[in-house]
Image (cartoon, rainbow, N blue to C red; front, side, top):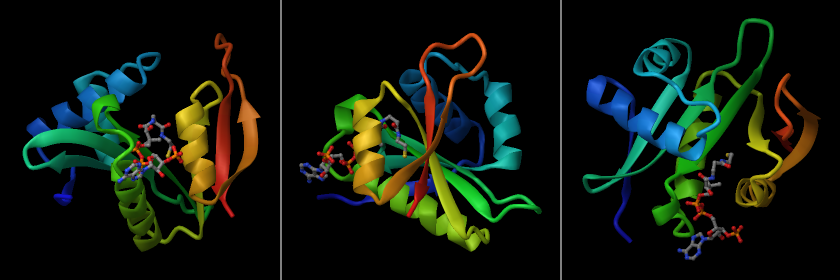
Length: 146
Ligand SMILES: CC(C)(COP(=O)(O)OP(=O)(O)OC[C@H]1O[C@@H](n2cnc3c(N)ncnc32)[C@H](O)[C@@H]1OP(=O)(O)O)[C@@H](O)C(=O)NCCC(=O)NCCS
């Protein structure tokens, strides 16, 4: 299998690619390019390619001064799922989170996203809490790496 190329978002082309994957997978929370540019300053955002083909992206929210918890979210475009790319992107996200000093790793999955939940459980996460945002009906589940 050819290797994935996972790169930190740096520059407009990567900002657009990251936005494309995010908004396709999370249509309920579309982000503008400015939103993504703002997130690049707070979070570690990566994009993943197979050759020149965009495959997925990730978000690592680094630990803050008063917590040692980072959040890692991997996303793979539907056409490229089930080939191990999610696992690779996720492992790179965890490695980045550890470099940033994270002692606890969390991820967030919508309760309706059965693939994402199974993926998180298969990678050693356990449910930590679930919450429904005001105006939403579907719960978000926070899972913690055991
Ligand atoms: C969750 C998500 C990232 C998984 O991406 P993916 O690329 O399909 O992930 P993987 O291929 O590594 O693993 C998915 C499945 O494929 C299987 N798989 C991995 N490599 C494989 C291969 N070479 N051949 C066949 N199957 C394979 C895995 O065992 C896994 O099986 P399971 O679903 O029965 O547990 C993707 O579904 C997604 O983007 N979902 C929306 C966002 C999300 O929920 N993110 C989760 C928070 S981290």
